[in-house]
Amino acid sequence: MTDSKQNVGDKPKVRFITIDGEDAGQRIDNFLLRTLKGVPKSMIYRLLRKGEIRVNKKRTKPEYKLATDDIIRVAPIRVSQENAPVSTQLNIVSSLEKQILFEDERLIVINKPSGMAVHGGSGLSFGLIEALRALRPDARMLELVHRLDRDTSGCLVVAKKRSALRNLHEQLRNKKVQKFYHALVKGRWSNKLTRVTEGLRKNDLKSGERVVIVDNINGKESETRYKVLQHYADCTLVRAFPVTGRTHQIRVHCQCKGHPIAGDPKYGHEDFDHELKSKGLKRLFLHAASIEFTHPLTEQRIKVEAPLEPSLEKVLKNLTKVSN
Image (cartoon, rainbow, N blue to C red; front, side, top):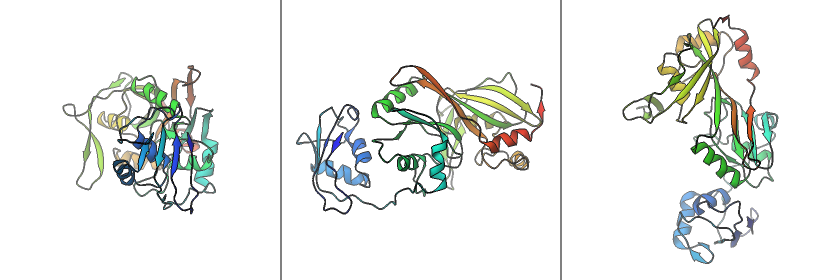
């Protein structure tokens, strides 16, 4: 992509953006939302509707898919600078550099810290993706390939090229990506319980909080496979492999089988969580321990592993192991 940009504070002027192979194939509305930083979504649709954004001198619709060498003309608009840039001096931002597990010209795999959302919004000024963009100001693009719950730590993949993003999304759709999680759950998980297939449905409570419930009639088909890693007194460390990717899937599947995950504020068990707090647990014990996929460029299968943070390792050391 080549772009005749304007500097902040300059008088707005016409911009011309030439599309290359990396940006071809995506809808123009999505492309403009990413490219025209600070411009509200409603304004982009209005500009498209009024013909103030054109492709190859012609009016276009929001769903138009860009092609290589398309020239987008954007009428003079003032880009909002409402959001302050993310400071790389913040400890939570600068420490992310040490959490990068793998990086090349196509993608980044990072060990996302617990408590950090993957993106800003809903009262959050920034999330992991905005922080990464601040750390990599010269990166042409950085986009989330998938997501993790805010309280979940572990492997998260970020694409550095549009082609890599498309490739990995296709692998996710075709179930070619394997993600394994480690979870500490209440009680003794049976070695025979290797699959949970309860349907899941999102449900809004009167308080406005959204939770996921088991619903085998109207819910979406879901499957999680489990393996016991270690039994402890009153709890079990399990490995979870989500075959499907529903919201809160592992957490709800554990809960519905009577084994809620330790430290889960939505689906947990109060007495169990209190006991684990005395062992040093201060967060949800759910960690994306590894991810395996085919590299978009080399076509080689790669597996990246994320170590447990020291606080979780310490909790496990404070537990009493029992035979499996």
